[in-house]
Length: 136
Image (cartoon, rainbow, N blue to C red; front, side, top):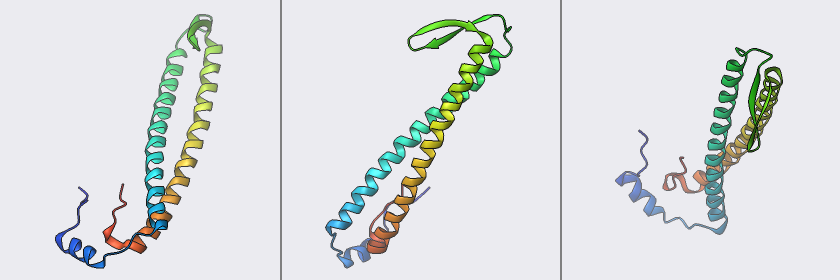
């Protein structure tokens, strides 16, 4: 378990420094906070996309067991359309590829956010030392 509170000694030494928070420091802290919120939202979206991809792959596996001449209900928008099994498999494959593209974009955005957060951490810890906690 990670310790989130300062010890009494750290608290006294942090209070002794009496560091002034400049406007640019506050802007960096605010930016870090907004990046952390974006990071959380993107991670949640990424989990949902991965779950959706897993579900599509499971459905595709089940549909391969169905006779090729049989019609299979496929949801388009708010309605279901009966389509031949091979066509449904193609649609599921294209949906999976689209999700892969979305996942790649989300991972790139997450990497960019992590890089910026690391830079902000470096700058803020350099300025405030242990008197600030940026661990998420």
